[in-house]
Image (tube, rainbow, N blue to C red; front, side, top):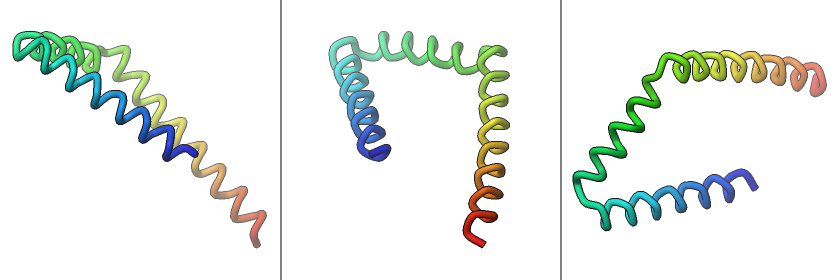
Length: 72
């Protein structure tokens, strides 16, 4: 189920990117790219990404330990 949702999301993003790119041209692409880069490199976003990765690592370790105990 997650793969289907991921595929649909990816297809939607690709469609939007193609549509915007085809209609707006290079200038709009540069504007969008600049906005996305500014957002991605924002210190608050960087901090949130690091926190999300750390939480995901902790959760995966915890899940692995639970699975190991359950299937022993």
